[in-house]
Amino acid sequence: MENNHHFDLIIVGGGPAGLTAGIYGARAKLKTLILNEGTAGGQLVLTHEIANYPGIESTSGYMLGSTMARQARNFGCTIRSNVRISSLNLNDDIKQVEVNEKDLYSADAVILSPGGRSRTLGVPGETELKGRGISYCATCDGDFFQDKNIIVVGGGNSALEEAVSLTRYASKVTIIHQFDHFQAFPHAIVEAEQNEKIDFVMNSKITEFIGEDRLKGVKIENTVTGTSEERAIDGVFIFIGYVPNTEFLKGKVALNKWGEIKVTEELQTNIPGVYAAGDCIPKKVRQVTTAVSDGTIASLSAADYIHQRKRDLVVI
Image (cartoon, rainbow, N blue to C red; front, side):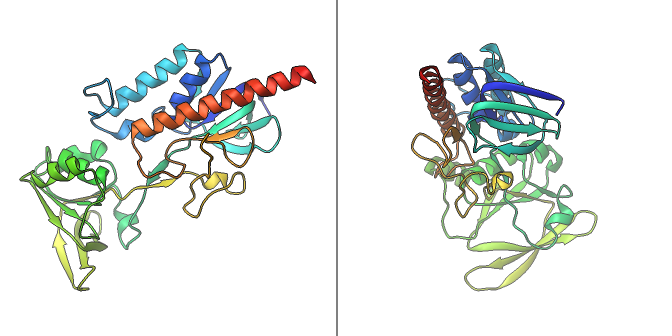
């Protein structure tokens, strides 16, 4: 190994949960390191506008994430972005995290906050036409569909909120949802229903994407009658939730059947000194505010564990 550095606390993942954990850890005078495989802020940076974060009337996800990262650094937290976690040893008293197959870091406690990624439909044509008319990020690609006819797939908060956001670009937005009702906050449903550019196709699902070099249309199946139709379309945005980024944790910590990390009320995993926070743990509501809450709880729990461990070592 080229380097071997010891910290009090290592946080794997730099989204809102990880950055919050870093702020609280560093402010508690713990030598704290955040290791992040992408850009600091995680999925947050893909959100065009955040208007429901308490105390901030309106900001972009990128700005909020950047501010969180700056706060963490100002308290003394070290952040390494765009690194790859190559191995983990979490079972020993001293935890070890290797990045880029060369740099080894150790710590008394670890917080896992790897976040998640966009869930795909898994139907024919999706892989081939991703980025060629199929998108999972309105902020990234909305502007490419100026005055176009597009579809949004999903029935949760993200789908409805992003559908409304996309009406700033598209001439028409059709929301396709497999059920007869939405799983979203009432205000999000009302806002979508009152938008003149949005219409709805319920009890339906896309079964195929049509096109060669670029998306040309979709096949839509009614989940009640079983009938199908083809519809010409310029673009499709898919917002059907996230898959937790926990594949690298299989066999390392206990996961549930959805791949989420099992935790206690203190957000400890099945391993002492190892905690988890954010979209990688079981939860009903996935918002920036809930991720921040998770990061706070996990960091304070880890701090208690670290301080107790140091007291025990002194006694010994």
